[in-house]
Length: 389
Image (tube, rainbow, N blue to C red; front, side):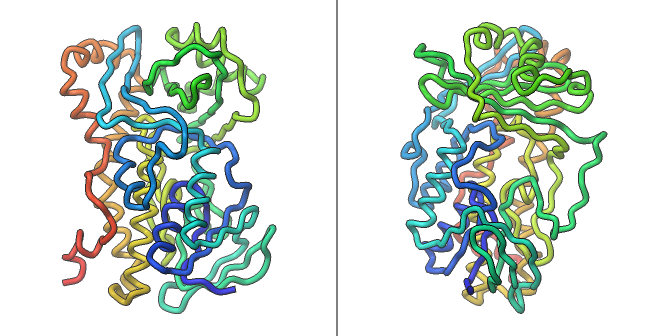
């Protein structure tokens, strides 16, 4: 088997890269180690700036279903603040979003191999890559370039050291069925000491709860499964108490992970371009993870096209992509880290929210700092011409 570009992973980053490449006339194969459209650990909020990247891919998030989200709020220590989102964001389950985007990539001409993983990978951008596939599709695949969009869980052949348990966080996501009553069209973060719970409606009768906790906050949890863990954290958040009492947990939606390290950045591995969480996990408090995945997937695709079209030398690919990636994402990752640090300390955040509630323009400015610039990345060479002087 041969292809121009191998994309490892079919989440938002991988599917965005594959669709962008296919629309540019590049032969691309996308492999996904699991089933397409399975539940994923994710806050499932698509922030407004994602619309730029989806439009460049010929897509509109409203076509995926879900719920338009017109406001964002934070609660801590009995205080709260809220700001309007203009344009609105969107919330949609990852099972729905991933299936929709993978289908869009295939409709553009990409080849998709589900339930297939890369067991070994060797090569570089100058001489090409050789991948050994296993699963539903087996055999050797030769590719000129590789984009890794495999999420936070790096494959063993990448050789990335595990996170120290002392520095790791845990996360847990579940959908709650809440009946036919109308849910507020807002995404909210509910802070407790050492963590927070995000809530957002993803359907008329379903809400996503996604919690993130530092190890110190999670250490005292008793066993009892996902519902017991969620209940223990919800007990810290009075704003969610009534919702929890009348809700029904959707068992198939539950996802959990430990050993998470947010903000650690590695945009390349050798000449493999990494996108989405594979390149760096943003702090979830920013609500920007899906938008970053889409943009980084398109950025990787644009750099790959530059090599294939001989506008960028193969030996400069990794350096150029790393610099372009950092230019695009480094500032928002720094601000997201500061937002995270504030939210996990509600004792100090609560009084600050009282003041912020009277200054909505300050909230808007802080929110903007965790977001990307509203430009397109279809031509990174035009955006960053200094790299070619």
